[in-house]
Image 1 (cartoon, rainbow, N blue to C red):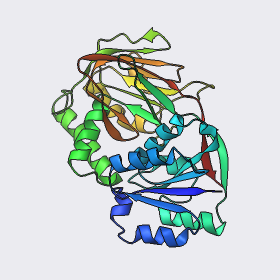
Image 2 (cartoon, rainbow, N blue to C red; image 1 turned 180 degrees about the horizontal axis):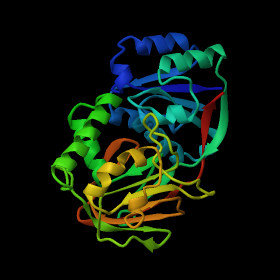
Image 3 (spheres, rainbow, N blue to C red; image 1 turned 90 degrees about the vertical axis):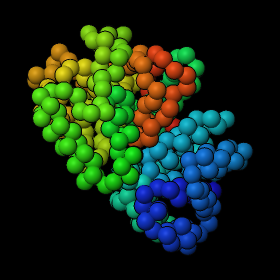
Length: 315
């Protein structure tokens, strides 16, 4: 079985461990280890692998690095012949946790695989597909976000991508800012002009605060915002189009996936077969990374489950 370990050297945990790449080479005899230094280099390495794909592709990096692997697999002539997994290395690594690995430390996970204390099992898993109707471009990911969440990620990136503690501090700061502003939007955070529809049922609003659609329901520690259990071919979906004054006290409820009684008329939080987003926005968030959309002005996105790929789960 041919295994490729693809490393994004810019990932948080890789940057903090200068000897990690060599340690991975030593710990994984027989595997081909490819170290890259940028998103573009990751994409180029994947393009080179497409000519003769390995049996297993293990990514070392964040969830954004793994998203590139998802997109790559879907371009292959026989995508079902390649199994992929994220073995950690990024800041939060929710796909590593979702796949059952004992740690988000890539070296620990890889050593466990090669020593045989962790066995990998193939399972079918469907990411979401985000289609830009105008351009025809299709993106694949575990989770899509826009609106205030994209604005939050933009600020988080600008301030240096800190730890989970930094995320909580930023979030608490925004809540306090809303409270002190008596419900006014925090500086730099504005509602999105646009429309949302869930299974063709349109939300009764011409502006909304944010939308989130995913195929998994666990992100940061204890962050499980979605309500309900999707049926086959359904996605998790969450959106809010009410006031910031009502949103601020609801954040603890949303964080743990608890229905918010006072938001029933201004929030959608339930599975759906398809989500339509028609809005004026220049970028979205896919698996924690800001992604610029082509063109300008209003655009329409459709979001649904994609065809399944083969994901490796740790046992």
